[in-house]
Image 1 (tube, rainbow, N blue to C red):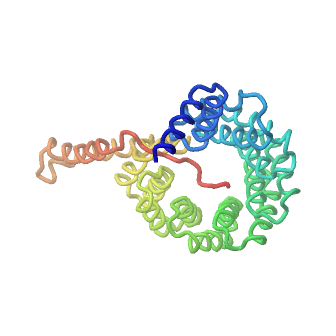
Image 2 (tube, rainbow, N blue to C red; image 1 turned 30 degrees about the horizontal axis):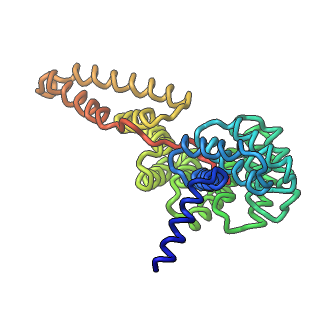
Image 3 (cartoon, rainbow, N blue to C red; image 1 turned 180 degrees about the vertical axis):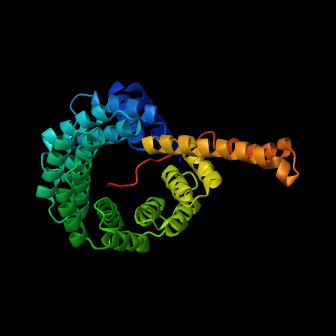
Length: 329
């Protein structure tokens, strides 16, 4: 026992006294932090320290570049992430995952030609993988080429008929193309595979609303909000349908909730202005009619205004809001 203890102490002393051994330990620790650290800024620093070391193997360098690119994306530094993916592709030009990941970032930045080029490279290298088709379809859709977008979605669904995201994306596009029956079929199929998805419930609600079926739309928006109470698009669309049904007080509350949750849409601004004008007109009319009902003007005004003020006070202070009805892999 004494000999083993002495040997252990000797080895520790050698390691602590050897600069190369310490450097190796620091490198391994930084690789672990780059991969596992929850604090994104600390993780980024660890990745960068690893990547600054000389004589890294290609594999270690690529792994840490990929981890840093993921961290940079989460930090909102997409262009730097694109550069890291590019560095990987210089060494591994047949890595279809990296072509896809860089394409996703280009799409988010609105660089659709570059995004489509990267998705096409990924598809050429992995032609049987549905997500890459769906991602390219989304890029085509956002640049306004619905025909090519639909062709990619069709192929994605053919390759993987049970992929809820491809079905969602195709359904959303078909709604915009006014192919409502096909849109409804795709979106309902997507929900049958992932019944808790608030985005798809909202998109299905829009399919009904576009046809003037606002009661059906409202039922789906309510389901979406039940699943994801801070899903801004569902509150926004709910407000529009309530307005179309003549329920203006409820519409105003829903629209204001959408605004509080960070929805940025010109239609929301116009709808809020319209509903607030109607609310103001309703208050004036109530005040004029007060003598006929025997109530006091202050009581009527207090009841109407009080309810609206209470609803506004309940808006979330720090909403967690994910905008975007369509999804990509």
